[in-house]
Image 1 (cartoon, rainbow, N blue to C red):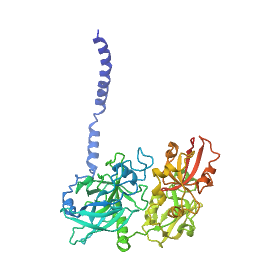
Image 2: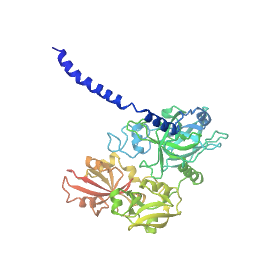
Image 3: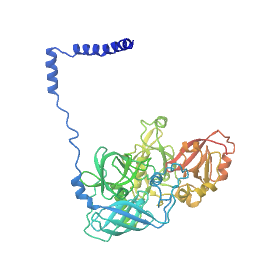
Image 4: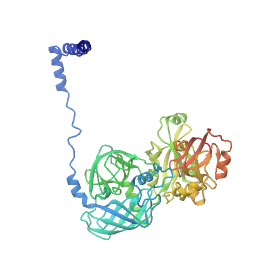
Length: 504
C-alpha cells in the first residue's frame, strides 16, 4: 500500500534529469572540424595576467618600523565635554560621529563621570629629536601625558599644540636618536592597495593589523576639513593616533575613527591623510594653532532633479544654499543657487570635496572658482577669509545637556530650544537676531526628519525666527498633525526639513 505512491512520485522525478543528460550528450559532441577550430582559438588567446600572486608578508615591515610607534597615556584632571572620563566606549564613538547615543536621546553618556580619567591611545615618532604625532581626542584636556616606547622606556611629553578640526596633536619629548618613521605622501593612496596599522587597542601595545584601502576622500560629517582614508583594517579603541602604513613602511595616515554600532570594529575605519596632518603640524610648530581659509558659504548636495532644473549637464558640484554676509564668497559675488564645480582647477564632484581644499589654504589666499550660473560656467576669483578657531560654538557644547533640555520649552515640533547669545551667533556665522537653538529632540517625527541637538532653526516656512517668542508666533496657526517646513543651520550646512507636528 505504501510503495505505490512512492513509485508514482519517483518516476517523473527520475525521468526529468535523465532526459536532460541524454539531450546534453548529443549536443556536446562536435564534429572533427569544429574540434580543430576550437583548439586553434584556445591556443591563440593569451592567458590572463596574474593580478594577485600571493598574500603579502608584513614581518620585515613591522620589524623595521615598529620601534617608531609609541603608546600614549593622557591623565585628564576633569572629564571632557560629553563625559569621556570613565565613559562607555560606545558612547564615545557615537559622540565622535555627532550622533545621539542609543537609549539616551540627550546625547550624554549614561555612564557616571569619574573625577579623574585616563585616555589611552597610540602615537608615532616623526623626528629623531622627539616629536610625536597623535590624535587631538587622545590628549584633549589632558594635564599630564606619558609615552611608552617599544623598548618599554617611559617619557613625559609636552603638548606643543592640538587642532580639534583635523584631530591632530603634536607632542614633544626631551630625547635624541629616536627611531622616527618615514612619512609618505597620501595623495597617491588608492582604493585596493594594502595598508598596515600598528597600535594599542585596549592597551595591547604594538598590535599589528592589515587590510586594504576601501575609499579615499570620505567625509564622516564631523570634520569637514579632513578627506578621510577609509580602510577595512581592524581598528579598535586605543588605536587612535597610530600610523597607517603603506607596504614601503611609510606613514600615509593617522588612524582616527571607526564606524560601529557595537562599539567594536565592524569593517569600516577612517584615517587622517598624512598630508592633511602635516599641514597642521607645521603650523602647530610655528604658532601652536592652525589657521584655515574660509569661503563663507553653506552648501547642500546637488541631486539629478536640481541639476536638471538648473540646466546642468550632470549632478556634479556643490550647490550654494546660503552666502555669509561680508564673507569671502559674498565679496566675490557668489550667490545662493550657484553651483561650485571646481576650485583652483580641481573638480568638485560633491559638497564634501570643497571644505578640505579651502581649509588647506591660509587666510588671504587668492582662489579661482568654477561656478555654474544661468546656464553656463564662469570663473570667479575670491580671497579667502579665516575660519573660526573653535571647532564648535558654546551653544553646540550645551546641546544635549539634560539640565538645559529640561528647562527649555517643548512645543508642537517635539523640540526643546534655547536662545542664542552674541558669541553663539558669531561662532555659528549667524547674523544678529538670527536663529533659535535646538538642545534636545524628543519627537519621533523630528528625529526622522534629521533634526539633532546643536541644529539652529532659522525659519518656519519663509518666516524668519530669532528667538523663542518669534518661533512660537510662527507656529501659532499650526495644528497637531500638520506638516511644517523648517530651515535649519547645522553641521551639514543650511538645509530644509519637513516635520509633522504633535500635541503639546
